[in-house]
Image (cartoon, rainbow, N blue to C red):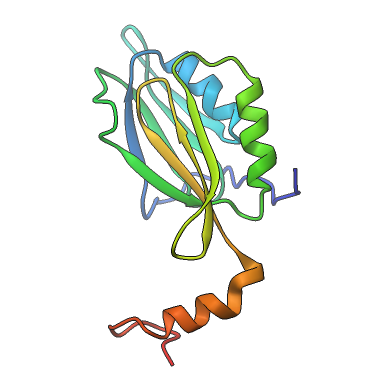
Length: 153
């Protein structure tokens, strides 16, 4: 697995985060820790944790809360941050996490490779990385976009 920066453990105003309802916070936390997240904070509740705050990289935050999940209702995409997605997918497949599916890495039409991780409650995290070998083709493709975005030529 490639090296990536240490996880920023400061609590800051998060510009974006996802909240996942899960049946078993401890089991889901263990799964996400295997996927490279760390548990920053656990907020106690009456019957166990009320919230577990997970982070993978800066601005890649997940909040796990107890509840009845609706499988497939939540998907969030994060940059893989240079991590070797094939190695990560292989490592996660070697673990025994009931109800977890790992798909990919798979190439997309928009010049990325993605690994889709579906947790035991049906929440999805997509880790994505640009296909650098096709960067010139991706730039030509992006030049066809309509809109007013930075970097448009």
